[in-house]
Image (tube, rainbow, N blue to C red; front, side):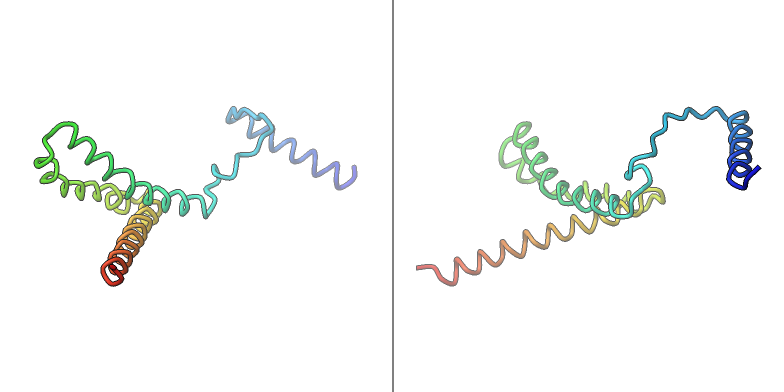
Length: 131
């Protein structure tokens, strides 16, 4: 028996022993890359979730408040949207979601900084060069 045949026989014996103990269906496919927790998948999905969180949640919240209450009451209740920041903070606290929550918080903070920075720059430009 050659070395290659001997190795194939041993691997077949080991696979047979494993298959006897645990019934694992083998469809011949390897898991996709996101099933193996690709290092950039969590970071990108967390960051863009944070970005969407900053854009979508306040808009939906004010829309819901305007639908349920009068304009003055809705404006008074709008600061309670900050309570939703408990979601990414809770994700950072939980050990299994800590990495996702951290990148979500980074997405929230970066988006807020960009929006406030650009808004401030546009306001300054408009007030300075008003004709």
